[in-house]
Length: 188
Image (cartoon, rainbow, N blue to C red; front, side, top):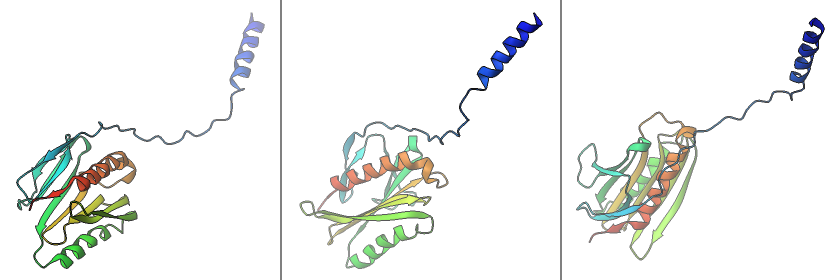
């Protein structure tokens, strides 16, 4: 009986020692999925209209300036802040301010890419800035007709910047911003 126990024990130990060497497992990332975007036209009585994602809720900006709004994405804990200013012989200073905003994130950003946006049919011209890295804002844009209207927008999340954590939400909001830019119409 003792001999049988020893044979079984050695058999168990020999089977357990035939495994491959342990290998570290790759880091896992949170797989966040968001609903397919469905857009609706928004007219809030301002000199501009646009399409917004149905999951975004419109709220007035915190400083209550007319036609300054925020699009809140509650499930993502983020917002797109939109400001509007009329052009009154100040286009150069409005453009300079809008182009400085993304540069404020260069300390934390890994990359800032700017894409020119032009829509001659609807007289909408501007820039879209994609910011990668642990910056406070992951995307910014401005649009103008060059004569009367100037609009800016920025994406912010209500959390400490950690690019790896917010990539899915940031990518989703960047698509929404691009749609907003393409659908923007000026009210003359």
